Image (cartoon, rainbow, N blue to C red; front, side, top):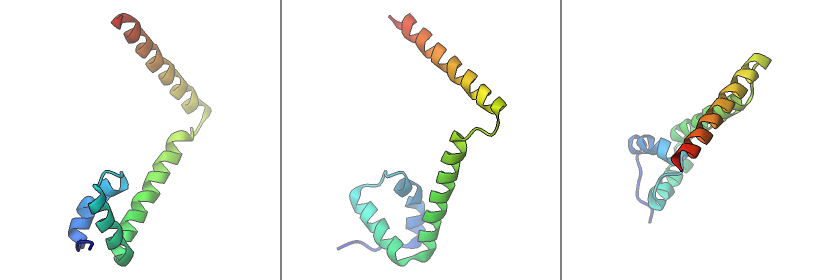
Length: 89
């Protein structure tokens, strides 16, 4: 039997649910709650859309200048990682 999960408690668990961090029992309770509660299901869909938008926007440079800045930052980080690695031995 799946325990009852109210909206207030479900909303507190939404982020952990979205991140796949809930124990199996709580995940099942949350999925059951989302089947009948359209309000909480809408919150989950909103979080998914926001996450997808952020991921899509993060990988799509807006201009050539932006792309050059990201490339320079990437090269700088890799250079530091290599230097720290070399110094650690």
